[in-house]
Length: 211
Length: 211
DNA sequence: ACCAATACCTACCAGGTGGTAGGCGGTGAA
DNA sequence: TTCACCGCCTACCACCTGGTAGGTATTGGT
Image 1 (cartoon, chains in turn blue, brown, red, purple):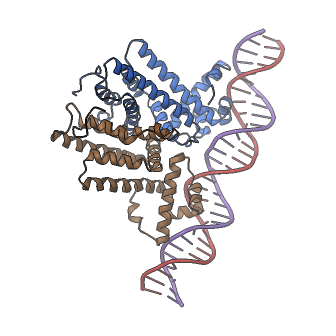
Image 2 (tube, protein in one colour):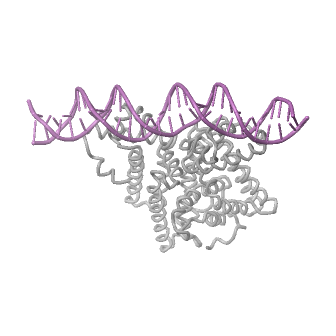
Image 3 (cartoon, chains in turn brown, cyan, red, green):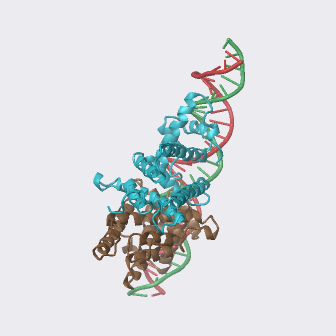
Protein backbone atom coordinates (compact mmCIF):
# COMPACT_ATOMS: atom_id res chain seq x y z
CA UNK A 1 0.00 0.00 0.00
CA UNK A 2 2.49 2.60 -1.06
CA UNK A 3 2.14 5.31 -3.68
CA UNK A 4 0.99 3.78 -6.92
CA UNK A 5 0.03 7.29 -7.93
CA UNK A 6 3.63 8.27 -8.51
CA UNK A 7 4.09 5.30 -10.83
CA UNK A 8 0.84 5.86 -12.74
CA UNK A 9 2.36 8.03 -15.48
CA UNK A 10 5.25 5.72 -16.25
CA UNK A 11 5.82 3.77 -19.46
CA UNK A 12 4.46 4.16 -22.97
CA UNK A 13 0.96 5.32 -23.88
CA UNK A 14 0.00 1.76 -24.83
CA UNK A 15 1.02 0.47 -21.41
CA UNK A 16 -0.87 3.20 -19.58
CA UNK A 17 -4.00 2.45 -21.58
CA UNK A 18 -3.66 -1.26 -20.85
CA UNK A 19 -3.22 -0.62 -17.13
CA UNK A 20 -6.43 1.39 -17.13
CA UNK A 21 -8.16 -1.44 -18.98
CA UNK A 22 -6.88 -3.97 -16.46
CA UNK A 23 -8.14 -1.92 -13.51
CA UNK A 24 -11.60 -1.70 -15.09
CA UNK A 25 -11.69 -5.45 -15.68
CA UNK A 26 -10.48 -6.10 -12.13
CA UNK A 27 -13.22 -3.87 -10.72
CA UNK A 28 -15.82 -5.95 -12.52
CA UNK A 29 -14.41 -9.30 -11.49
CA UNK A 30 -13.54 -8.45 -7.88
CA UNK A 31 -17.13 -7.22 -7.66
CA UNK A 32 -18.51 -10.51 -8.93
CA UNK A 33 -16.43 -12.99 -6.98
CA UNK A 34 -14.43 -10.96 -4.51
CA UNK A 35 -10.67 -10.59 -4.29
CA UNK A 36 -9.95 -14.17 -3.26
CA UNK A 37 -12.44 -15.58 -5.75
CA UNK A 38 -10.92 -13.89 -8.79
CA UNK A 39 -7.84 -15.19 -10.60
CA UNK A 40 -5.27 -13.16 -12.44
CA UNK A 41 -5.86 -15.32 -15.52
CA UNK A 42 -9.53 -14.31 -15.60
CA UNK A 43 -8.67 -10.63 -15.42
CA UNK A 44 -5.89 -10.97 -17.97
CA UNK A 45 -8.15 -12.91 -20.31
CA UNK A 46 -10.78 -10.20 -20.20
CA UNK A 47 -8.31 -7.63 -21.51
CA UNK A 48 -6.78 -9.99 -24.05
CA UNK A 49 -3.37 -10.64 -22.54
CA UNK A 50 -1.70 -13.53 -20.73
CA UNK A 51 -1.51 -13.55 -16.96
CA UNK A 52 2.25 -12.96 -16.85
CA UNK A 53 1.47 -10.04 -19.15
CA UNK A 54 -0.76 -8.67 -16.43
CA UNK A 55 1.94 -9.25 -13.82
CA UNK A 56 4.23 -7.11 -15.91
CA UNK A 57 1.95 -4.15 -15.21
CA UNK A 58 1.04 -5.04 -11.61
CA UNK A 59 3.78 -7.11 -9.98
CA UNK A 60 1.44 -8.89 -7.54
CA UNK A 61 -2.27 -9.45 -7.12
CA UNK A 62 -2.28 -7.19 -4.07
CA UNK A 63 -0.72 -4.37 -6.10
CA UNK A 64 -3.60 -4.65 -8.56
CA UNK A 65 -6.10 -4.50 -5.71
CA UNK A 66 -4.41 -1.37 -4.48
CA UNK A 67 -4.78 0.24 -7.89
CA UNK A 68 -8.47 -0.68 -7.97
CA UNK A 69 -9.13 0.96 -4.61
CA UNK A 70 -7.19 4.04 -5.51
CA UNK A 71 -9.11 4.35 -8.76
CA UNK A 72 -12.46 4.79 -7.04
CA UNK A 73 -11.07 7.25 -4.54
CA UNK A 74 -9.77 9.45 -7.31
CA UNK A 75 -13.01 9.36 -9.31
CA UNK A 76 -15.38 9.79 -6.38
CA UNK A 77 -13.39 12.49 -4.71
CA UNK A 78 -13.10 14.49 -7.91
CA UNK A 79 -16.86 14.45 -8.52
CA UNK A 80 -17.65 15.20 -4.90
CA UNK A 81 -15.28 18.14 -4.72
CA UNK A 82 -16.60 19.47 -8.03
CA UNK A 83 -20.04 19.61 -6.43
CA UNK A 84 -18.67 21.29 -3.32
CA UNK A 85 -16.85 23.92 -5.34
CA UNK A 86 -20.05 24.71 -7.17
CA UNK A 87 -21.46 25.74 -3.82
CA UNK A 88 -23.49 22.63 -3.01
CA UNK A 89 -23.70 21.58 0.63
CA UNK A 90 -22.08 18.39 1.92
CA UNK A 91 -25.36 16.49 2.30
CA UNK A 92 -26.48 17.54 -1.17
CA UNK A 93 -23.16 16.50 -2.67
CA UNK A 94 -23.51 13.20 -0.84
CA UNK A 95 -26.91 12.54 -2.34
CA UNK A 96 -25.60 13.40 -5.79
CA UNK A 97 -22.65 11.06 -5.29
CA UNK A 98 -25.00 8.24 -4.39
CA UNK A 99 -27.16 9.03 -7.40
CA UNK A 100 -24.10 8.85 -9.68
CA UNK A 101 -23.01 5.57 -8.13
CA UNK A 102 -26.37 4.04 -8.99
CA UNK A 103 -25.20 4.26 -12.61
CA UNK A 104 -21.95 2.39 -11.95
CA UNK A 105 -22.89 -0.93 -10.51
CA UNK A 106 -19.41 -2.51 -10.66
CA UNK A 107 -17.87 0.26 -8.60
CA UNK A 108 -20.53 -0.04 -5.94
CA UNK A 109 -20.31 -3.80 -5.93
CA UNK A 110 -16.55 -3.99 -5.69
CA UNK A 111 -16.53 -1.65 -2.73
CA UNK A 112 -19.33 -3.44 -0.92
CA UNK A 113 -17.61 -6.79 -1.39
CA UNK A 114 -14.12 -5.63 -0.56
CA UNK A 115 -15.18 -3.56 2.46
CA UNK A 116 -16.77 -6.69 3.93
CA UNK A 117 -13.95 -9.07 2.95
CA UNK A 118 -11.33 -6.71 4.31
CA UNK A 119 -12.76 -6.66 7.81
CA UNK A 120 -10.33 -9.54 8.41
CA UNK A 121 -7.10 -8.02 9.73
CA UNK A 122 -4.86 -9.97 7.33
CA UNK A 123 -6.73 -9.03 4.14
CA UNK A 124 -4.46 -7.00 1.85
CA UNK A 125 -6.97 -4.14 1.82
CA UNK A 126 -7.60 -4.08 5.56
CA UNK A 127 -5.43 -1.07 6.37
CA UNK A 128 -6.88 0.80 3.42
CA UNK A 129 -10.45 0.40 4.65
CA UNK A 130 -9.57 1.17 8.28
CA UNK A 131 -8.07 4.45 7.11
CA UNK A 132 -10.91 5.14 4.69
CA UNK A 133 -13.65 4.68 7.28
CA UNK A 134 -11.78 6.82 9.79
CA UNK A 135 -11.42 9.63 7.23
CA UNK A 136 -14.99 9.42 5.95
CA UNK A 137 -16.46 9.39 9.45
CA UNK A 138 -14.28 12.30 10.53
CA UNK A 139 -15.18 14.38 7.46
CA UNK A 140 -18.85 13.73 7.95
CA UNK A 141 -18.72 14.48 11.68
CA UNK A 142 -16.89 17.75 11.07
CA UNK A 143 -19.55 18.91 8.63
CA UNK A 144 -22.28 17.98 11.08
CA UNK A 145 -20.54 19.93 13.82
CA UNK A 146 -20.34 22.95 11.56
CA UNK A 147 -24.03 22.55 10.74
CA UNK A 148 -24.80 22.36 14.45
CA UNK A 149 -22.88 25.58 15.09
CA UNK A 150 -24.84 27.25 12.31
CA UNK A 151 -28.15 26.00 13.65
CA UNK A 152 -28.77 23.79 10.63
CA UNK A 153 -29.06 20.62 12.72
CA UNK A 154 -32.26 19.31 14.26
CA UNK A 155 -32.22 19.40 18.07
CA UNK A 156 -30.91 16.30 19.81
CA UNK A 157 -28.75 15.12 16.89
CA UNK A 158 -25.29 13.98 17.98
CA UNK A 159 -22.81 14.76 15.16
CA UNK A 160 -20.62 11.69 15.70
CA UNK A 161 -23.57 9.31 15.89
CA UNK A 162 -25.22 10.89 12.86
CA UNK A 163 -21.96 10.57 10.91
CA UNK A 164 -21.84 6.85 11.68
CA UNK A 165 -25.48 6.52 10.71
CA UNK A 166 -25.03 8.30 7.39
CA UNK A 167 -22.08 6.12 6.41
CA UNK A 168 -23.82 2.96 7.64
CA UNK A 169 -26.95 3.87 5.73
CA UNK A 170 -25.03 4.42 2.50
CA UNK A 171 -23.20 1.10 2.88
CA UNK A 172 -26.30 -0.84 3.82
CA UNK A 173 -28.43 0.65 1.08
CA UNK A 174 -25.81 -0.30 -1.49
CA UNK A 175 -26.18 -3.96 -0.56
CA UNK A 176 -29.98 -3.77 -0.71
CA UNK A 177 -29.74 -1.95 -4.01
CA UNK A 178 -27.50 -4.65 -5.48
CA UNK A 179 -29.98 -7.34 -4.48
CA UNK A 180 -32.89 -5.28 -5.76
CA UNK A 181 -31.37 -5.32 -9.25
CA UNK A 182 -32.93 -8.80 -9.51
CA UNK A 183 -36.35 -7.21 -9.12
CA UNK A 184 -38.41 -5.35 -11.72
CA UNK A 185 -37.45 -1.74 -12.19
CA UNK A 186 -40.22 -0.25 -10.08
CA UNK A 187 -39.28 -2.43 -7.10
CA UNK A 188 -35.64 -1.35 -7.04
CA UNK A 189 -34.15 0.43 -4.05
CA UNK A 190 -33.63 4.14 -4.63
CA UNK A 191 -30.49 4.70 -2.59
CA UNK A 192 -30.40 8.44 -3.11
CA UNK A 193 -34.04 8.94 -2.11
CA UNK A 194 -33.67 6.88 1.05
CA UNK A 195 -30.50 8.68 2.02
CA UNK A 196 -32.20 12.00 1.39
CA UNK A 197 -35.09 10.99 3.64
CA UNK A 198 -32.66 10.30 6.45
CA UNK A 199 -30.71 13.50 5.90
CA UNK A 200 -34.00 15.40 6.24
CA UNK A 201 -34.25 14.09 9.81
CA UNK A 202 -30.74 15.33 10.58
CA UNK A 203 -30.35 18.67 8.78
CA UNK A 204 -33.01 21.39 9.00
CA UNK A 205 -32.19 22.63 5.51
CA UNK A 206 -32.73 19.35 3.69
CA UNK A 207 -36.45 19.49 2.98
CA UNK A 208 -39.56 18.93 5.06
CA UNK A 209 -39.88 15.90 7.32
CA UNK A 210 -43.23 14.95 5.82
CA UNK A 211 -42.95 12.59 2.89
CA UNK B 1 -30.56 -24.91 -1.34
CA UNK B 2 -32.98 -27.63 -0.26
CA UNK B 3 -33.97 -28.69 3.22
CA UNK B 4 -30.88 -29.55 5.21
CA UNK B 5 -33.11 -29.28 8.25
CA UNK B 6 -34.73 -32.60 7.52
CA UNK B 7 -31.31 -34.24 7.33
CA UNK B 8 -29.97 -32.56 10.49
CA UNK B 9 -31.08 -35.31 12.87
CA UNK B 10 -29.70 -38.16 10.80
CA UNK B 11 -26.84 -40.48 11.76
CA UNK B 12 -25.23 -41.28 15.10
CA UNK B 13 -24.73 -38.85 17.97
CA UNK B 14 -21.03 -38.61 17.16
CA UNK B 15 -21.75 -37.56 13.59
CA UNK B 16 -24.29 -34.96 14.63
CA UNK B 17 -21.81 -33.46 17.10
CA UNK B 18 -19.13 -33.35 14.43
CA UNK B 19 -21.46 -31.64 11.96
CA UNK B 20 -22.17 -28.96 14.54
CA UNK B 21 -18.42 -28.58 15.11
CA UNK B 22 -17.83 -28.25 11.37
CA UNK B 23 -20.48 -25.55 11.01
CA UNK B 24 -18.89 -23.56 13.85
CA UNK B 25 -15.46 -23.82 12.25
CA UNK B 26 -16.88 -22.85 8.86
CA UNK B 27 -18.55 -19.78 10.35
CA UNK B 28 -15.20 -18.63 11.69
CA UNK B 29 -13.28 -19.26 8.49
CA UNK B 30 -15.86 -17.97 6.03
CA UNK B 31 -15.90 -14.85 8.19
CA UNK B 32 -12.14 -14.41 7.93
CA UNK B 33 -11.57 -15.08 4.25
CA UNK B 34 -15.02 -15.37 2.71
CA UNK B 35 -16.56 -18.38 1.02
CA UNK B 36 -14.24 -18.43 -1.99
CA UNK B 37 -11.17 -17.75 0.14
CA UNK B 38 -11.69 -20.67 2.50
CA UNK B 39 -10.73 -24.25 1.64
CA UNK B 40 -12.41 -27.40 2.84
CA UNK B 41 -9.03 -28.64 4.06
CA UNK B 42 -8.72 -25.63 6.38
CA UNK B 43 -12.14 -26.23 7.87
CA UNK B 44 -11.56 -29.96 8.17
CA UNK B 45 -8.18 -29.40 9.80
CA UNK B 46 -9.72 -27.13 12.42
CA UNK B 47 -12.04 -29.89 13.59
CA UNK B 48 -9.40 -32.59 13.39
CA UNK B 49 -10.57 -34.59 10.38
CA UNK B 50 -9.46 -34.97 6.77
CA UNK B 51 -11.20 -33.04 4.03
CA UNK B 52 -12.90 -36.10 2.53
CA UNK B 53 -14.07 -36.73 6.10
CA UNK B 54 -15.77 -33.36 5.95
CA UNK B 55 -17.27 -34.14 2.57
CA UNK B 56 -18.83 -37.21 4.11
CA UNK B 57 -20.95 -34.88 6.29
CA UNK B 58 -21.52 -32.15 3.72
CA UNK B 59 -21.33 -33.51 0.18
CA UNK B 60 -20.23 -30.23 -1.41
CA UNK B 61 -18.81 -26.91 -0.28
CA UNK B 62 -22.08 -25.20 -1.17
CA UNK B 63 -24.01 -27.61 1.04
CA UNK B 64 -21.80 -26.59 3.95
CA UNK B 65 -22.44 -22.93 3.19
CA UNK B 66 -26.14 -23.61 3.25
CA UNK B 67 -25.84 -25.20 6.68
CA UNK B 68 -23.91 -22.19 7.96
CA UNK B 69 -26.58 -19.76 6.81
CA UNK B 70 -29.37 -21.85 8.21
CA UNK B 71 -27.56 -22.05 11.54
CA UNK B 72 -27.68 -18.31 12.12
CA UNK B 73 -31.29 -18.07 11.09
CA UNK B 74 -32.29 -20.67 13.64
CA UNK B 75 -30.29 -19.06 16.47
CA UNK B 76 -31.26 -15.46 15.73
CA UNK B 77 -34.91 -16.18 15.13
CA UNK B 78 -35.22 -18.17 18.35
CA UNK B 79 -33.76 -15.36 20.47
CA UNK B 80 -35.79 -12.71 18.70
CA UNK B 81 -39.05 -14.57 19.11
CA UNK B 82 -38.25 -15.27 22.76
CA UNK B 83 -38.07 -11.51 23.26
CA UNK B 84 -41.29 -10.96 21.36
CA UNK B 85 -43.14 -13.58 23.40
CA UNK B 86 -42.02 -11.88 26.58
CA UNK B 87 -43.97 -8.86 25.42
CA UNK B 88 -41.13 -6.74 24.07
CA UNK B 89 -41.84 -4.59 21.02
CA UNK B 90 -40.25 -5.26 17.65
CA UNK B 91 -37.81 -2.32 17.84
CA UNK B 92 -36.79 -3.25 21.37
CA UNK B 93 -36.25 -6.87 20.34
CA UNK B 94 -34.19 -5.61 17.42
CA UNK B 95 -31.91 -3.59 19.65
CA UNK B 96 -31.48 -6.55 21.96
CA UNK B 97 -30.64 -8.76 18.99
CA UNK B 98 -27.97 -6.33 17.87
CA UNK B 99 -26.62 -6.15 21.41
CA UNK B 100 -26.35 -9.94 21.54
CA UNK B 101 -24.65 -10.05 18.15
CA UNK B 102 -21.94 -7.71 19.45
CA UNK B 103 -20.83 -10.67 21.59
CA UNK B 104 -20.56 -13.05 18.62
CA UNK B 105 -18.14 -11.50 16.21
CA UNK B 106 -17.78 -14.51 13.88
CA UNK B 107 -21.52 -14.67 13.24
CA UNK B 108 -21.68 -10.99 12.42
CA UNK B 109 -18.59 -11.19 10.25
CA UNK B 110 -19.69 -14.21 8.26
CA UNK B 111 -23.00 -12.57 7.46
CA UNK B 112 -21.48 -9.25 6.50
CA UNK B 113 -18.97 -10.96 4.19
CA UNK B 114 -21.39 -13.41 2.64
CA UNK B 115 -24.17 -10.87 2.16
CA UNK B 116 -21.74 -8.75 0.13
CA UNK B 117 -20.14 -11.65 -1.77
CA UNK B 118 -23.54 -13.09 -2.62
CA UNK B 119 -24.75 -9.97 -4.40
CA UNK B 120 -23.35 -11.70 -7.52
CA UNK B 121 -26.19 -13.65 -9.09
CA UNK B 122 -24.13 -16.84 -9.47
CA UNK B 123 -22.91 -17.02 -5.89
CA UNK B 124 -24.25 -20.18 -4.21
CA UNK B 125 -25.86 -18.10 -1.47
CA UNK B 126 -27.42 -15.51 -3.78
CA UNK B 127 -30.97 -16.87 -3.71
CA UNK B 128 -30.76 -17.27 0.05
CA UNK B 129 -29.91 -13.60 0.59
CA UNK B 130 -32.46 -12.36 -1.93
CA UNK B 131 -35.13 -14.23 0.00
CA UNK B 132 -33.77 -13.18 3.37
CA UNK B 133 -33.73 -9.46 2.56
CA UNK B 134 -37.22 -9.66 1.11
CA UNK B 135 -38.51 -11.33 4.27
CA UNK B 136 -36.68 -9.06 6.67
CA UNK B 137 -37.80 -5.92 4.88
CA UNK B 138 -41.39 -7.13 4.71
CA UNK B 139 -41.47 -8.04 8.43
CA UNK B 140 -40.03 -4.71 9.38
CA UNK B 141 -42.41 -2.78 7.13
CA UNK B 142 -45.42 -4.62 8.51
CA UNK B 143 -44.48 -3.72 12.07
CA UNK B 144 -43.99 -0.09 11.08
CA UNK B 145 -47.39 -0.04 9.41
CA UNK B 146 -48.96 -1.43 12.55
CA UNK B 147 -47.13 1.21 14.58
CA UNK B 148 -48.44 3.88 12.19
CA UNK B 149 -52.01 2.66 12.64
CA UNK B 150 -51.55 2.81 16.40
CA UNK B 151 -50.10 6.31 16.26
CA UNK B 152 -46.69 5.15 17.50
CA UNK B 153 -44.89 6.52 14.43
CA UNK B 154 -43.53 10.03 14.06
CA UNK B 155 -45.32 12.08 11.43
CA UNK B 156 -43.90 11.88 7.91
CA UNK B 157 -42.26 8.49 8.36
CA UNK B 158 -42.84 6.17 5.40
CA UNK B 159 -42.98 2.56 6.67
CA UNK B 160 -41.33 0.99 3.62
CA UNK B 161 -38.51 3.55 3.54
CA UNK B 162 -37.97 3.28 7.29
CA UNK B 163 -37.80 -0.51 7.00
CA UNK B 164 -35.07 -0.21 4.38
CA UNK B 165 -33.25 2.31 6.53
CA UNK B 166 -33.37 0.13 9.64
CA UNK B 167 -32.00 -2.89 7.79
CA UNK B 168 -29.38 -0.79 6.01
CA UNK B 169 -28.32 0.80 9.28
CA UNK B 170 -27.90 -2.57 10.95
CA UNK B 171 -25.84 -3.91 8.05
CA UNK B 172 -23.72 -0.81 7.74
CA UNK B 173 -23.07 -0.52 11.45
CA UNK B 174 -21.90 -4.12 11.54
CA UNK B 175 -19.14 -3.33 9.06
CA UNK B 176 -18.08 -0.23 10.99
CA UNK B 177 -18.18 -2.22 14.20
CA UNK B 178 -15.93 -4.92 12.74
CA UNK B 179 -13.36 -2.31 11.70
CA UNK B 180 -13.63 -0.57 15.06
CA UNK B 181 -12.47 -3.74 16.78
CA UNK B 182 -8.95 -2.60 15.78
CA UNK B 183 -9.45 0.50 17.93
CA UNK B 184 -9.18 0.82 21.73
CA UNK B 185 -12.31 -0.23 23.60
CA UNK B 186 -13.68 3.28 24.16
CA UNK B 187 -13.49 4.08 20.42
CA UNK B 188 -15.52 1.07 19.32
CA UNK B 189 -18.81 1.48 17.54
CA UNK B 190 -21.82 0.75 19.74
CA UNK B 191 -24.17 -0.75 17.16
CA UNK B 192 -27.09 -1.10 19.54
CA UNK B 193 -26.86 2.48 20.76
CA UNK B 194 -26.68 3.90 17.24
CA UNK B 195 -29.59 1.78 16.10
CA UNK B 196 -31.58 2.89 19.14
CA UNK B 197 -30.88 6.53 18.32
CA UNK B 198 -32.31 6.02 14.86
CA UNK B 199 -35.34 4.11 16.10
CA UNK B 200 -36.09 7.06 18.41
CA UNK B 201 -36.53 9.21 15.29
CA UNK B 202 -38.99 6.70 13.83
CA UNK B 203 -41.09 5.40 16.73
CA UNK B 204 -42.66 7.79 19.26
CA UNK B 205 -42.36 5.22 22.03
CA UNK B 206 -38.62 4.65 21.75
CA UNK B 207 -37.33 7.40 24.03
CA UNK B 208 -36.91 11.14 23.66
CA UNK B 209 -35.30 12.60 20.56
CA UNK B 210 -32.85 14.63 22.60
CA UNK B 211 -29.57 12.85 23.30
C1' DA C 1 18.83 4.98 -37.53
C1' DC C 2 20.00 3.73 -32.99
C1' DC C 3 18.97 1.45 -28.70
C1' DA C 4 17.38 1.26 -24.04
C1' DA C 5 13.16 0.70 -22.00
C1' DT C 6 8.73 -1.29 -22.47
C1' DA C 7 5.14 -4.63 -23.55
C1' DC C 8 4.21 -8.47 -23.99
C1' DC C 9 4.82 -13.87 -24.88
C1' DT C 10 5.50 -19.24 -23.86
C1' DA C 11 6.94 -22.51 -20.70
C1' DC C 12 7.29 -23.77 -16.28
C1' DC C 13 6.95 -24.25 -11.16
C1' DA C 14 5.37 -25.76 -6.45
C1' DG C 15 1.54 -25.92 -4.13
C1' DG C 16 -3.43 -25.63 -3.47
C1' DT C 17 -8.48 -26.66 -5.08
C1' DG C 18 -13.01 -29.39 -4.74
C1' DG C 19 -14.27 -33.83 -5.42
C1' DT C 20 -13.99 -39.21 -6.08
C1' DA C 21 -12.83 -44.27 -5.14
C1' DG C 22 -12.47 -47.58 -2.23
C1' DG C 23 -11.20 -49.21 2.10
C1' DC C 24 -11.62 -50.25 7.26
C1' DG C 25 -12.91 -50.19 12.02
C1' DG C 26 -16.84 -48.71 15.12
C1' DT C 27 -21.93 -48.36 16.21
C1' DG C 28 -26.13 -49.96 17.51
C1' DA C 29 -30.67 -51.97 16.29
C1' DA C 30 -32.45 -56.80 15.31
C1' DT D 1 -23.98 -61.99 17.22
C1' DT D 2 -25.07 -60.55 13.06
C1' DC D 3 -24.99 -56.84 9.63
C1' DA D 4 -26.29 -52.59 7.50
C1' DC D 5 -25.04 -48.23 8.22
C1' DC D 6 -21.88 -44.73 9.72
C1' DG D 7 -17.60 -42.04 10.48
C1' DC D 8 -13.57 -41.26 8.61
C1' DC D 9 -9.23 -42.57 6.33
C1' DT D 10 -5.45 -42.71 2.46
C1' DA D 11 -4.59 -42.20 -2.23
C1' DC D 12 -5.62 -40.07 -6.14
C1' DC D 13 -7.57 -37.03 -9.79
C1' DA D 14 -7.76 -33.03 -13.11
C1' DC D 15 -7.53 -28.56 -12.73
C1' DC D 16 -6.44 -24.03 -11.00
C1' DT D 17 -3.47 -20.72 -8.21
C1' DG D 18 0.07 -16.72 -7.99
C1' DG D 19 4.51 -16.11 -9.42
C1' DT D 20 9.18 -16.71 -12.10
C1' DA D 21 12.56 -17.23 -16.11
C1' DG D 22 13.82 -15.87 -20.09
C1' DG D 23 12.68 -14.86 -24.55
C1' DT D 24 11.04 -11.54 -28.66
C1' DA D 25 8.75 -7.65 -30.79
C1' DT D 26 7.38 -2.84 -30.27
C1' DT D 27 7.88 1.90 -28.83
C1' DG D 28 9.61 6.39 -28.93
C1' DG D 29 13.11 9.75 -27.30
C1' DT D 30 17.82 10.85 -29.05
